[in-house]
Length: 429
Image 1: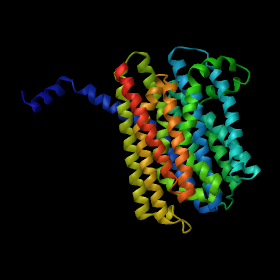
Image 2: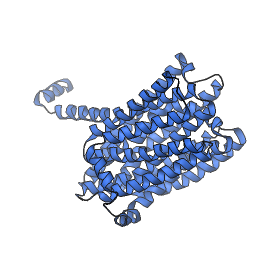
Image 3: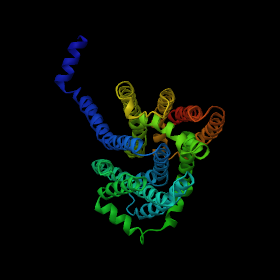
């Protein structure tokens, strides 16, 4: 039988349809999961445009620094709560109050640290306090969307993202049109958006979060901390140093105005970076479920699908950046910024994102398998490389060149994680 005849026969017998249905299911799953992150990416992108044109360069640098601090808090939330919550839910544990109480404690801690960092970077007391509330509310919202994924309600997580995005854009546009735009008003709009997204996580989630004030015990979290999350948090902290050492060093050494130039270039990569932060919350429970059921091959197949989806987002992000640079450069590049330096930042960020995207699926696989201790050490070594190289390049060549240190650290981390993945697959596949 010829290949064409065999293909026709296969379709007639229905053998090919399961593959087609599976492909359609995969596409719908990723379309749903990227809808929320892309709505936030669009909102932050448009918000940054408003900040760029309505605020001074120094103020724009401050708000851009907030959007570095908050993702770090969200990653720490994932390390402390999201992965153990997913494992506990799939293990059939009924009482999850310990995670809700821990999320409240961490939200307060994130608010205090976020406010202190903003004050240290040049914001006044009032603005620092408002942005501190934003940091705390966003960590609670991120835990809420993870809780929705764990309970197999991805539409609720997407609705939370969309509510946050719509509220933020509407509030900022209203402030701009009413000529009431200021740093404090913009920060208040960000707080309102985060609270709107938190409420959309559902009444049951909000009630459970409030009841955690008196229910649950932090002592019950000690076992999770000892066995799992301390290693995960170590990985997050060292990864933050690897990925964003330039943001902290440039802001604190050269000032928020110098960081503004880096922030302008990074705006072009915002969709890819946000998708990379959000998609693991979808894939981690699926991988954990497959691994718990002994379906290693299914988990590895998800790794490949994840990488393909992230690659598509990266390509789309580059296409959007090219369109803006060619036809609408005035949207992002003000006269006070050197166009050549902005393009150099974009090129460096594109290379950094490509390296990160290549390793994220394996990292999420290790998180789902509970291999946080093994996952922590590659980021520890890479953070040392990143901080040292970034600091040296910043002092020798300036803020733009400091991104080369971030790229060096990411390459070191990716090489180590791929080595771990090869050994893990050989032992389990």
